Every structure is written in C-alpha cells, then in structure tokens.
Length: 158
Image 1 (cartoon, rainbow, N blue to C red):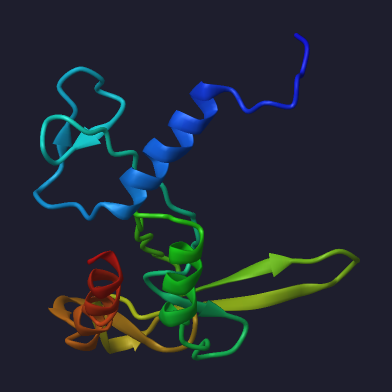
Image 2: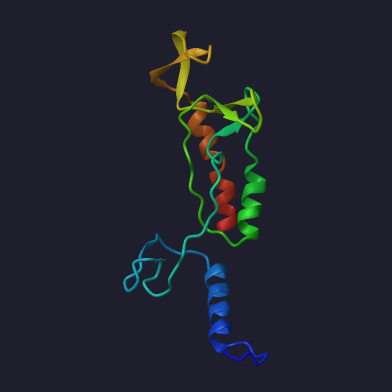
C-alpha cells in the first residue's frame, strides 16, 4: 500500500460518526441493535458502543488504612468523560480485608474494603477482630453511599 499523504475517506467518515455518537445523548432506554447484536441502540438506527474503564473500587472504598480513604468519584467521572467513556460497571467486593504481597520477603500489606451491605452488630467477632455481620440487618449507609455517585454521573451524561 502506497501512502500518498491523503487521509482515506473511510477514516474521515469513521471519525465523524464516532464524534456524532459521542456527542448525541442517549434519549431512550438501550436495547440490542436490530441488525448488529454487538451494539446497542436507543432509536433502532444508530449503533451505540458502551465503553468504560475497569477499576475495582468504584463501588467500595479500598486501601491499606482502616477505614480506607473514600473513592474520588469526581476525579473518576472527569477521567471517564475526558476519554469519551459512556459506561460504568460497578464492582462489589465481598472481602473486608486481605493481604497484598509486594516484592521482597516478608513484605505484605493488609488492605481493607468498606462499606458492606450488612450491619456489624455481632454477636461475637469476625476473623478481622470486628463485630460479625448480621445478615438479617442491612446497613442503611451502604445503599446511600452507592446512590451518592448517581446524580454526578447522570449530570455528566446529559
């Protein structure tokens, strides 16, 4: 293939189409595209590809301190927007603590994750030395914390 210094028409059209898809807000609930099931659509015509970036702690806070520092949703949403992402997958984390091995002998870091859906009322202590979870009592702060990120994300998407 000989390069002539011209931009192929297909690349220009693809670029214009991608800009249109990014710029146009999603107007209706998404459904599978009728002619290409690899994509979604909101109007039955345009194809919408969901793109996002994975991070473990966008639903719970994680870190080596107890409690760990709060996840910075504002910075995360700004980063997603700057990279034209339109999808956030939320990841639950079941462990309350775990050791992360780092390079070198006898070197590990204890990490913690919060919040969890249940209250820690006991009776007795869990393996991490805190009160055991009562699986019959939901922690009211857990869903409130998760819902706290929704208005910011929705506002960016509009």
